[in-house]
Image 1: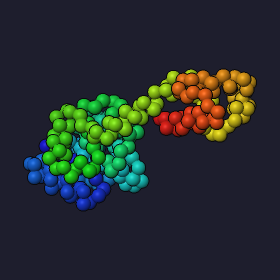
Image 2: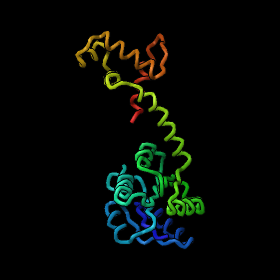
Image 3: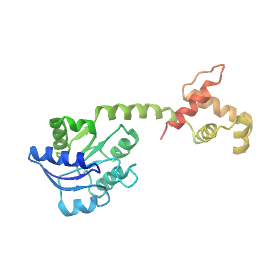
Image 4: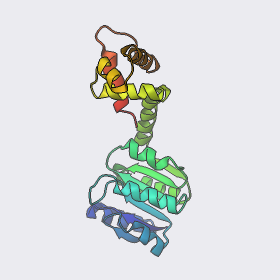
Length: 215
C-alpha cells in the first residue's frame, strides 16, 4: 500500500511510518496537520489515508473535516481515522455517507501492530473497520435520540425553552400561546419520551437532559 499519513504527534507519526514499513507498506507523505491533505492526495495518488481526528491549529475536528472532504471529492476513498477518545458525534458524521473503505479506530489499537496493519489493509480493500467501543457509543447515542424524533416541531420548541429554564407561563409568553396549550405540549413530551409522572417533577429535568444529549 502507498499511504498518506496526517498526524501531529511526531512520535506517533514516526512510529506508524516504521511499523507500516516493516509490513512492506510505504508512507509516501506524512503531514503534521490536515491543511494540505487534499493536495498531497492529488500529488501522490495513495491507496489509503490515515489521519487523526484532532489536529492543529485548534485540535478539535480538523482531521474529521479533512476526512469528510476527501470522501466528498473522491467517493469511498479509503480513509482510516485515528482518535484518542471515543467521539461518537464525529464518527456518526463521518459514516453518514457510507462505510465502504472507511475505518475509525482508537489510537490504543496501534499498539497491537498486526491488528492495526490488518485494519489498514481491510480499509484499503474497500472494507469497514470500526472500533468496538466506537460502535457501542454510536448505538447508545442513536437510542438516546430515537424518542426525540417522535416530538413535533412545536414540542421541540417547547422543550428547547424548558432547557433554557423557562417556566410554563414564560414559555406561553415567549410562544404567544395559552398556558394550557403549553401544559398539553409538555404532557405530550413526557409521554413520548417515556417519562412517567412523579411527585418531584424529576421528569422535567430528565426531558431537558435528553434534549441536551441530542444532535
